[in-house]
View 1 (tube, rainbow, N blue to C red):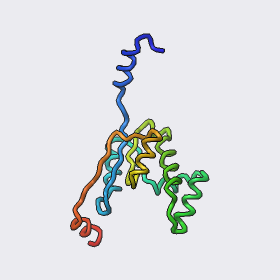
View 2: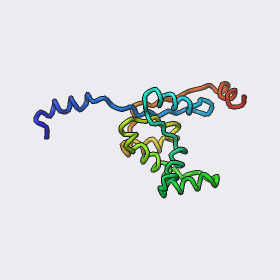
View 3: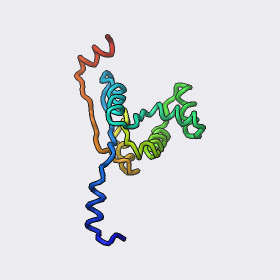
View 4: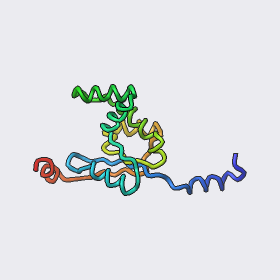
Length: 141
């Protein structure tokens, strides 16, 4: 127990917080490029759900192996499995120490709620918007 709880609280709150950024947007917004630039500029860990599945599989983690098997077969990774892999990654030492930019996840409100419930509160959420005509031009060419 600190001698002066108020002073302790103030000093704790003054500690610079690492950035935890969620980057969302529709197809055509080039989230990958935006996430890579943010990660490089702010020295954050770039986290992309599909990459997490491959990394976890490569490391021999059972959840990662299961997810990669599903991806390779063309099946969708169940939300609960993907959520577990994402939360495990965001809880890793490198993400806790350096902060993270999470690209394109969570896809739905229920997953966002699950993240917050698990204590993975972002410091910033960026939603990239684009009008339909521009998205079509970018995607179709």
